Image 1 (spheres, rainbow, N blue to C red):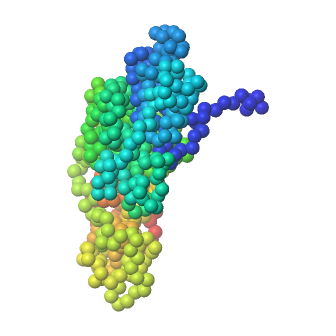
Image 2 (cartoon, one colour):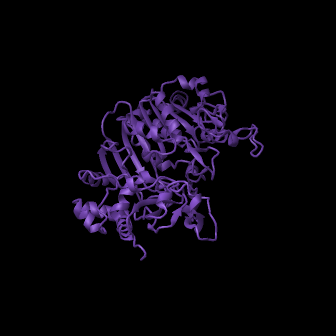
Image 3 (cartoon, rainbow, N blue to C red):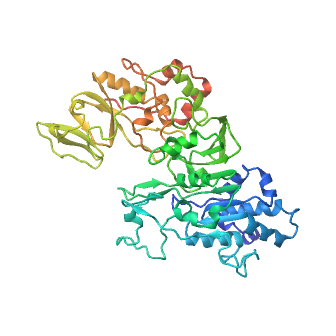
Length: 511
């Protein structure tokens, strides 16, 4: 009972997240990140730190603790030391008015920096060095020119969403032109660190959203810090919506010194499911060379390797260190990519929402939809009509909420007989001469080997043509097993064990 009475939890460990896109960072993780920096930074009274995306103030609070200890001999008086740290070394830009108050409470122990309860006596205003500058979106053709937000969603004049002055516009000052009107934009920072918002609604269908975290990273680099650390979703590894240019920029930047990858976001942010996992990086202006890549799974480091982020002949980041040697062995065969057999989205021109007709007639084609089999007239098919009466293989375009070990990676393929078509729910593989070749192709897809190579490109549930890039073509006059493929490519026992750890067996139904 006495333990319960004396229990005093850290309030920043107990905060509920704003959303899956604006996540509070646990203090434990913050300190693991700060350990990546040279600890001499915390013994230098001239080191400056900026968190441009303050939510709880946890980064600045934990930095404060280290500076208090590190500067003890140089500034012996505690109050003088606190005043120096808060007024000369720590700076923050809050993402909302509420998080500005929360951050000041965490750092200054009072929501007003110059108030009577503040542990800093150097300020005579409410903000201190944690600001929430007002900022507005700049609309052009219905989108913000700075962040890509949708005017329909964020414009205050939108009648469906009330956004009066007391509501946040999410026009994050750090990545909008108004930032350069602030004095803080002219300062030189040694360390920029934070956990930026991940995305903003772009007004598209089904709560479509545009990534935004990369804009904070690009803006931070423009300020030319010595060190930059930010936490982001790992989706940028494979590029995608608005991220291809950013991915290339990151993979070719030899100043990335450390990359820590959490395959399951719950290992980083308990209770938060972010498709594709999350990661953080240490960017060091004076570094030029390989990057230390660490993979975290189940709260343990399962792999650590110094390597370049961009493997020769690839445009994406191979997130699993153990996969590098496997991929190199396969590339030595110089075989064509299986992706050449995979259709693009909407193979027959029909969106996922298309249903066709529920009843058939003499001219009907079976149509595979998200609701099962419906029907459509052959004359209504404008795209790839010549595929309809050929043998082919169908596979779901999307599968799985997140990627982790012991995963199927893909849904089960199934035979596409003549006189069939599909909506965007599926992709077409083929076409082929007969049913047996289709079955041989499906035997290959069902192997762990095949799906492991897809996993290297598939960081989310979406499985478009590009995720098949690393899969080599085979002779489909025969069926395939994992043992045959392991032997063909000369995989070691350790490499085989890793594949079988990452991917579950898949049994195909008998046709």
